[in-house]
Amino acid sequence: MNDKSPLITHVGWGRMAVEGIGEGKDFKLYPGGGRLWDWKETGTGHSPGIQPADVRELLDRGSQVVVLSRGMQLMLQVCPETLSELADKGIEVHVEETMSAVGRYNELAAASVAVGGLFHSTC
Image 1 (cartoon, rainbow, N blue to C red):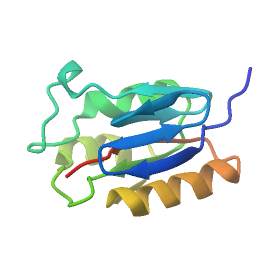
Image 2: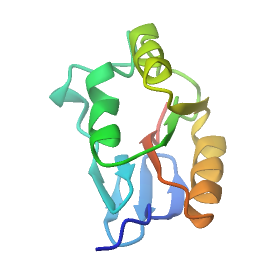
Image 3: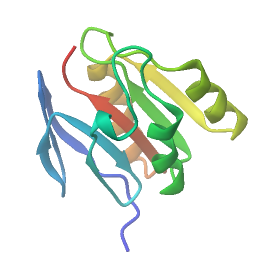
């Protein structure tokens, strides 16, 4: 089993490509794979933002570091409860604009860190 976090090979407005997964708008990535991120699953919206339930899948899949992208224009918020839950579990977290978040995530993944992330490719 390959538990390496997949690299993001392209990011542009409304479109990302991930090695071994394909193309889409928003992604959940973690050691060993990833999938499209459907906000409706957890009731995520720009506000209140990324929910604790959104990151639990990343942790369940072995992520020891989490990168959260806030969108290209920083419109996506992060619930304080989400950050509290990550801190309580001792998870290192990075919250950044999408292009910066992709760069940080790819750097960590390339270094074989067990990194997971949530990526939003529009506003």
